[in-house]
Length: 189
Image (cartoon, rainbow, N blue to C red; front, side):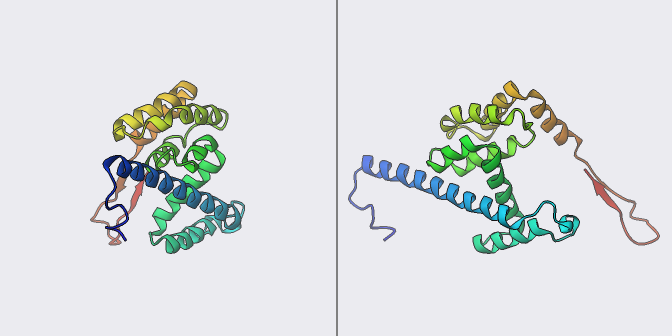
């Protein structure tokens, strides 16, 4: 099937098939994330006393999702964060994704870049990004980041600054290796 389905088609028909498949792939990805968001709503209780445990309801759900998707728990957790962001913070972007007009790459980058946008500004940022995002597919990673941050900066300039400050403030310290207890402390931010 793989090598025969498109045999005999002209270049224009092949390009149309490629575009159609890309839109279907994006729409399927949106449906997957919608199901993940629903599972998060059902399975993750933010008020659960186990929230501080090493293995809480979020990690349990991400382990289950990871098993279903054949990915690791951390990658599944990332998918959960994107799904929740689309559902509650970026519904206009989610609608474009659901229509197959945005790729998973774009949606992932948009959801991560908008994390620090305030609740008051997120609806305007969502609308601003949704108005432009379907033209961002061909952009390089650096240009995509700049385009997203330009919209964010227009409506919540502190969010871009906060993101840059968080990145600059990252550090990791490892204690002295001559520790008499034969342990090394590690801390970071």
